Image (cartoon, rainbow, N blue to C red; front, side, top):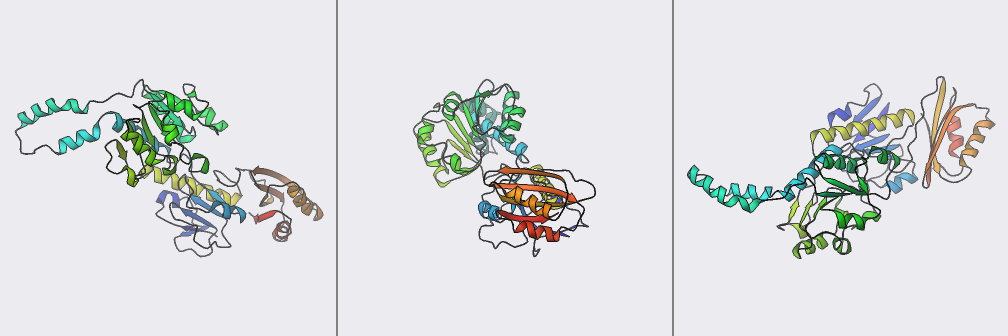
Length: 390
């Protein structure tokens, strides 16, 4: 029986992915094999010895001590792209709010006298509506920083709206490149993208390399008429620098999902309360993806969408026993493990080994045998972090 402890409110569709006959799932599970969570901060919580995996129903993992878990052989999953459509649609809403004067128009209507005579109100509206004239998105250039799953979806949407799209992503994966429309013009650097764009949107993770990508120096490269959108992470943009640029007329508008004190009440800012992924469909998609990844790892050792270990998959060989182990990515570890098997005259039926940075993970199917003692022997091999019999 696998035990999964949940934190936060997890969508029922996700919880239903765990087979009842082999999983115990709840918010007060002792000695869990896995965590399933959304925003719960794990940094200050003790780490159970039994914990094998953590899945976050969302993209960011800043609430999880990934480095510490990596050293313990705990695989950390996230759900990239599961909330992509929700974010994509909010980016479109953000661009429309920025260009069409929707919010001041709504405020104007809300202030009208409900007791006024209808003909007079209509006449006044016709007189005042020119205050809210805007611009159209068609023909404008959208710059997308980060061309992964969500960035690609935003690009597709913008092209369908008749916009021109330029993109920059120094870490673009092969899979993402295949998905990307040929109509997206790749920029060689951020500076080129900023200088060409009428709208700029970010879809990058919150890491050291992306901290304050938009600051005084990069804002100076943008058109004074440009609109900046941030539905990625708060840290990507230096909010104080943006406020100064807006005040100086060096930037037209800032639309974001991360209110900060320096932005509150600014006439050129549209700040939303972090609702990018707050749709019923998005929460269900994230929960289902996270649950499926946990089930596949716990039952088969397969890894998909891990932020700390490489992706790995191997179909089950009939009539075999399966072991998985993770290790420091140094020379000789796999050879030493295979020597343990050879010494015991255990035949390897199939195996796969993958590495990523300082870490590696392996799946080995051996001729059907009791692997309990074998797992202990493998765990004693230098640089092996953790071994499982699956």
